[in-house]
Length: 115
Image 1 (cartoon, one colour):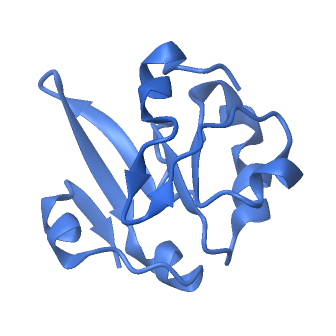
Image 2 (cartoon, one colour):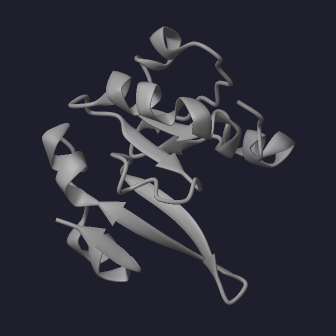
């Protein structure tokens, strides 16, 4: 879908987190995305959301978006804006079904959690 980040996210390319090198990929194919650990689903893909989330269902891939109702539809983390501040919601149930464990501190910070 449309890239809402532009070049701003590219500064993370090549950085390391706990020994893992960060790669930023822009894709338009679900099959190519299957090798990723984190996927951001652009709001421009809202009409295809059901198909996209079905593809990633029960896989250890963190799905993130800012599409309204994202966690209720089977996504894992949804960014929302409240009082001009970015907040987030988490669907911990879907994360666990895919073999992911969300840190309890992060769960406490979430505006909404589905367990």
